[in-house]
Length: 534
Image (cartoon, rainbow, N blue to C red):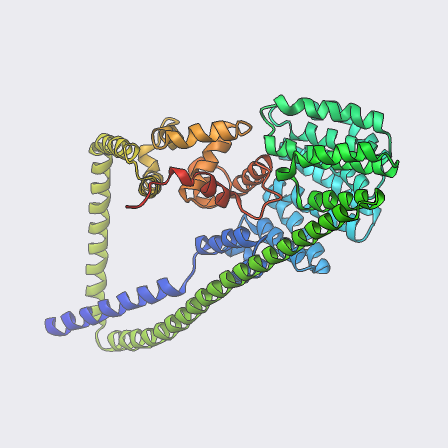
């Protein structure tokens, strides 16, 4: 009897182990599906097809698998629809995003979805009912205390009027809130943009006196530390070209040339559209002054510029395609792995079922004994494990904290930045996993950051004084290699809040016109911090 029991228990234990492994490989938890959602949001703007694959990997019902994040799911769907020009699906998914955002009280998502509906309905369909969604965005941002979102809502009608060449209307909308834009001291961008639209509107209306009045106020913002120099130069370049066009329309050729030369001083800050207008105005100027040789030179320059843009777009498309191929291969491997796990699970289930039936029918008494023994062993292991955990918490906390401080000092003395970044990441994960015992009484891991890479923070403050402390901290996390979700866990905020901050930082650093992400820009700017390889 003992021999049979021993062999059976061994066989049963092996089967349970295989069943556990197979179940772990097959079954996904809500945390796994939230990772899919995070990945989709990372790729949604640059690689919408890959983002859609991640979203499609989240099964129904959404209420169970991504509870509390359904609004973000439909927002990502809407962004993908926008990239693919699927307008009907776009409206539907943004409406669903608003519906679930109200239930989840995610007012940032509700405000963003409302603004997207306003933009698409007004621009694409030219329907005045779009302004209802603009009011909804204002309501949601108010509930969420999102001050910057409210400012964006406030400036949207003026931008739309400028887009529709309703320059006087655009001016009226801006002037109604100009003092409010000026009062935003932590970010001068909104006042800068208001002055920019006023100057552009009056220049396009050929009212050069008023255009110069607001232009002088805009130039005075050069001393505003919250506005990056590159951002100010960008608007200066655009307005110099606008003034040149205004004088050209009046046939003031000397003044046209003066403003073209001024625009040339900001050549490096020009956007793509500015460069086109700049070259185009030179072509028109030399055509009007019968300077054929110079006209041909600028026609060639414009053609060369367009060829460069075309080649750049082709290279970017090839890069995206390669990334998609790699991602598709990875997803295919995961699919095959799931199928294999299903087969293994089915085989093991049949084996275990047969063994269970045999044991129930012929060895009922042995089963009772095994169950009693197993239950007692589990109870003993549980009590022992909890006892050891309590002892470790009682006697090991001070020693653990001491070890962490020593490790921080060792990391801060490491000159190899790449190695340091990896060590920092592992340290943060260690602290996060032990946060229930380490981070108490308001103690935060943010207090440890300045000991790890002082040079990074010093250079960031010198290059980007317009960023506040929390934004510099976020840049440091991104430079170190953390993802949105990990940063949100460390800062005890939502992933949506991290995404919003990343957008604001990119806007302050004037990355909209560049074909690089915030992380790529940080790696490029701080490449000199990396220790050369021997």
